[in-house]
Image 1: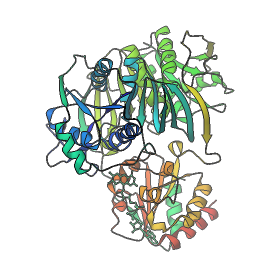
Image 2 (image 1 turned 90 degrees about the vertical axis):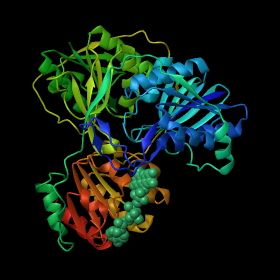
Image 3 (image 1 turned 180 degrees about the horizontal axis):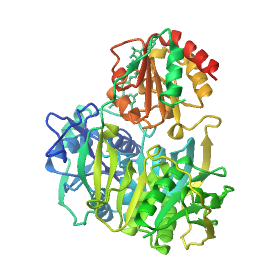
Image 4 (image 1 turned 30 degrees about the vertical axis):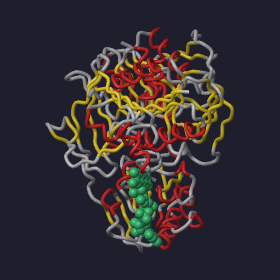
Length: 247
Length: 317
Ligand SMILES: Cc1cc2nc3c(=O)[nH]c(=O)nc-3n(C[C@H](O)[C@H](O)[C@H](O)COP(=O)(O)OP(=O)(O)OC[C@H]3O[C@@H](n4cnc5c(N)ncnc54)[C@H](O)[C@@H]3O)c2cc1C
């Protein structure tokens, strides 16, 4: 079985969010870049676990982005990817990115494609569904557990107010979240091995974008907290009811 | 050209988020001088003609549709419905289902996709929609360049308005290949309000010292019709189930009221809750970072303050 894990590059969760170039670009000065946590902790680690259980599993990692992403790609290889593909495209339109992944996936004949549930920068949560549609595959979102038996996958997924267990044939695209696996730290052996594992760079596949990110803004600052004396919680309840209309 | 809104329904009622999507779709349709159609997949005991009070002209219902866990089949149905009325705007709510189906519809229709919209389209210079990015720490404006657009509306971002009207309900049958996804089991946490949909959320952090102290969180939640949530530290310590964990790596929520007790307000926690309309923080440390993101706060010991708040809520009815 061939598995493809999609990884995105995002600012570290504590990064200061600011913009440059007339608020059209994220200010990346001094920002530490990481693999999008959902992609790494859940999608990638679950794929590694499947590979550990079944030595015939081949695990590839794909990233759509520029050369500055190689550090995070090497980390994915250090954690356990066999091979990585970077599609050299800077376009941010989700469908353009999905098209790159779908093209690579078509050529590679993967039976399982994993993404994280969303990226922590764009918060689009659309990548898995886009790729699935482009490949005419089944897609299950927000998976918290995955077991594979032959060509059948059993997936636990979050639904509103609960959980659902579904069974679906492969090939399959899955978006992964908490529950799928536990985050890991690369070990020395992995880091050494990652240096020699193939990282293939391919040119972008042409695809016309339908959206673009025009102008960032920071949300207006809060007016400031209204502190209520600890011995007068009645006032808090009153304000919540009458002023904030929140009760 | 017409606007199509995808409706989610459960146990005989239309989801509140879908009603918000309808009101949003209605505003778009009115400005464009066009009609609003709602699409309902499957059967429901809800009175669909009453959707007219949200501006719907026509409800298309696909009674025979059962594959409500199959994003491929659902997208196929939505795309066929959109095609049949030549809709140029297809609106979903940015819910679990909306997020999973809308992108597929966009691909099918060659449409531009905006997920998590928080504003009506601004058409003075192209077609621009605002959405949250960086987990609520910033906003961006997306320019949509395609003639057809698929939009998912962020829950709690658009006000529900009532109008006069009755919608006509028509039955449809679409040709959709049989689903290959089988639902084996559904587990619902019964009796509690689902966190993602809750208007009010009472949340506890490590400051509560242990799971045995959650009684006051649950009591206040019950009194105010709120859902309960927790910080990641609490879920990691197994004091509370993981599905209650909110924040950057948990659920992102935007209720009308977020009431945080004994939570420090780490940046990753704030990322999941800072879109809440009103934030209340109870913390014994006046320097807790959460106060900077709060609207109301009490500096005090939760074990002393919470019983008094519960008492006050009871007394004020
Ligand atoms: C990559 C990454 C992702 C993360 N994602 C998330 C996430 O999604 N969600 C999340 O919540 N966290 C997340 N975290 C963890 C986050 O950084 C914090 O560690 C966590 O939120 C702390 O939880 P807490 O506020 O409950 O506990 P603490 O930080 O221990 O805070 C406890 C608070 O309770 C107060 N307190 C103590 N006793 C009392 C009392 N008697 N009465 C009133 N107040 C009292 C204290 O003053 C303190 O402010 C993430 C961290 C990382 C690195």
